[in-house]
Structure formats: C-alpha cells, structure tokens
Image (cartoon, rainbow, N blue to C red; front, side, top):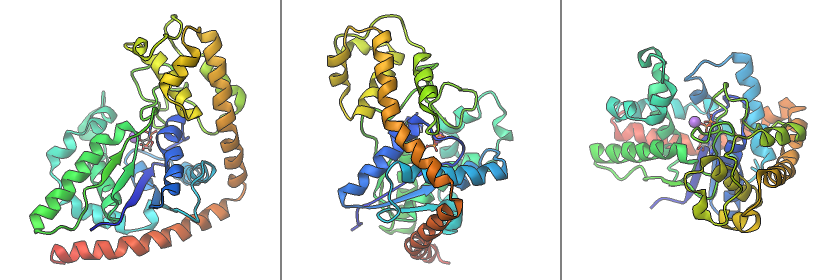
Length: 333
Ligand code: ADP
Ligand code: NA
C-alpha cells in the first residue's frame, strides 16, 4: 500500500561529528543508490528545543546543508530541505500531540538524559514533545524507512506507536509503521574520552569529538589522545568484550574503511595503539578531508545553499501538504 520512501533528519545544533557522518550522512548518501525516494531534513525546529543563538543557528543550518552535500547527498536526487520552511511539520506535530500520551514522552531516555542534573520541569515544553515532532516529520511523508543511529531507536518505536494509535482511534489504515534502519558497525560512535558516552555535537563539554570541519592535524591529534586501556588489540572479536574504547576505535576504522570489525581485527590483532591509532588517524583524514574541503567551498556561497534549501522545501511541501490535509480531514477538520 505504501511506496518505499526514506526519510531522516539531523539537527543543525552545532558542528556535525564523525558520529553523525558514520551513523547518518554516509548512509543517507548510500540510500540514494537503492532506487528509493530519499528525503532529508535539517530539523531546526528540533534544535530550538534547547537554546540556540539565532545567528549561530542560521550559520549551523547552512553548514549542516553543506555537510549533507559534501557527504554525497545530491539535491538533484534527494529532497534536501529545512524543517521550518515546510509548515506541515509543525501542524502535523500538533495533531500528533493530541494522539500521543504525556507518559510516553516522559519515558524517553533522551529526554531523561538531556534533563539529567537539571530540573526537568524547567526544560522547554518542546524538549518533552520532541519525539512527537519527529513522528510528524516521518509520518507526514508516509515514510517507510528511517536510517538513524542506535540512539534514535526508542524515538522510532514511539513513532510507530503514535501511527498505530492514530490508525486505531480513527479506524483507518492511514499511517505506515516506519522501519528504523540501524545498520553497520558505527550505529553508535562513542566519545573518544569516555567509551560509555556517545559522541555528540549537542555536548559542548566534550572537546574530544571529531568535527567534520576539523583539519588533518586536529583529527590526528584527537585520535592520538583517545582514551584506551593499555592492552594491545585482541586477536579475535570476542577479545573486545568489556573493552568499550577499543571496540569503538575498531568500529570506527571498520565503518570508515567499509570493512567488518572482524576484518580489522584480522589485520591489526596483537598490535599496540602506537600502530593502530596512526593508521586510524590516516584513514579518517583520507575520508574526512575531502568532505571538509568541499564544505568550506560550499560555505563560500551561502546564497546558493539557501537556494538549494528553498527548492528542496518546495518539493517536500508537495508531498507533505496533501498528507497533512488528509489527516485533518480524517480527524474532522
Ligand atoms: P547529535 O546527537 O549529535 O546532536 P542528532 O540528534 O542531530 O545528533 O542526530 C542526527 C543523526 O545522527 C541521527 O540519525 C543520530 O542517530 C545520528 N547520530 C548522532 N550521534 C551519533 C553517534 N555518536 N553515532 C552514530 N550515529 C549518531
Ligand atoms: Na540526538
């Protein structure tokens, strides 16, 4: 009943990281070769759930668009646009706010993480409702597949629950249940200073993260300083058990090289960090430098980026608006 369609998004909430590249951007580009429609969104309405300096948000939005394009997302083959330019997202989110339950939102681990140590009652109402806006993003395109990192799995399950409750409450088969696509060796890239935390652009306290705009020296230095245990790399995959930092670096290598973690262990098993870290740094520089160079080139012409996003918004609106109107009609409006 539903045409296969890919939708995903990234918040323009700061410097995009290696985690965003491996967990999202690289896979977004690959999806374009699979003969399905691909729709990618800079979710600025999500970014403002926590404070954003207005001028910084504008720059970050263009920079994120440049990162998509430099990573291989082709605006001629994918729809690439900015969430706030397509009002159907916010309107659909309101409809879904009235379908979703408050308790579902309080159960989200990302909400708990982001309000940790702070008074949850004093965070924005938008931060609590974040997952219902995300459901709106996806459902307003009748998207069937959503490539995301592991951290978004729970939000995707919630999207399916909201779709199912809408269909049940109104006795329709209107929204598809979108499938999360969580694939590959880098679905959760961890921080280089703490293997128990994910690498995130939204965590300004973590200076170890690899930004897509970092130059070669910075990338090499960050990998050199990556925290690990002292033991050499194990001779088999099982030997990574209980070694979060070692596993993380092996997974990053595998994802960048397009190989399996087992392949990487077969090549580097028994070697010390003095060998592996420089090899990883070289590989990362080889893969990321063309991206940062292309991003810098694109950022020289912000007006061109804005034109691309405006065109993308027009194409997105053409899909989203009729689906929003049908949802309104189903609900009696
Ligand atoms: P962030 O948490 O860095 O602010 P977003 O919430 O904007 O990133 O997420 C954008 C996309 O990048 C999502 O698909 C998310 O799953 C993915 N992603 C974010 N951080 C990582 C990571 N460390 N490893 C793998 N994927 C990630
Ligand atoms: Na996130």
